[in-house]
Image (cartoon, rainbow over all chains, first blue to last red; front, top):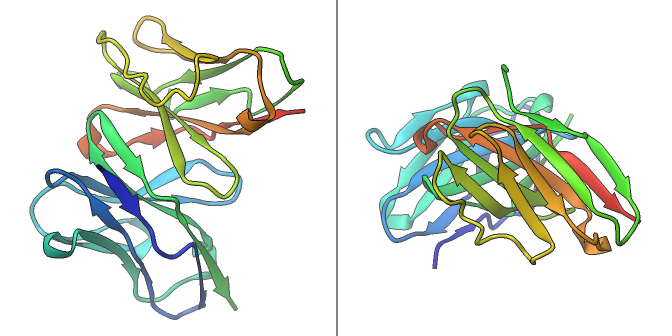
Length: 111
Length: 113
């Protein structure tokens, strides 16, 4: 069955530190892969996407993600976190008519 | 419009009443999705519309939930005889092609008292 797992419910990092949010999936074929961010009281905003080609993709706000087929993972990274990055992050996996979202990882940024 | 518009942004209703939630997608987007986000939870798929095809209703949690999309544009999600467990944020998204990702609205926060 298709599923998306974000193992970390809540992560706290210091401002300026590096960040990695994990996403693992189970899917029948290589799906489209996305990361979304949801700031408090806001809708979801697309950070980046992968559907083919280079497995390291760049997104907005300095985020990047790497698709690793052998590990069925699509982890989100940022070299230096800013206080404004505090939000909920969702990994999404699927195709045109079957998009699954993870439960989300809440990021807290310490000053 | 420039983005996906949802109304109302907040709705408080009494248990047992019916509610209608509206979504106005981006012009030209043929795909429209409804998701539900409960407190501390991820996004739960509800229903998917693609062009003139029959909608994928596999995510609707009960027969109290229904949705329609008129003219391939505006969609209305209706919840009949609301229950307290229906309290959540209902998110609408539209897409031209899933390869480009979805554009989400800001959601409707439904509170059933």
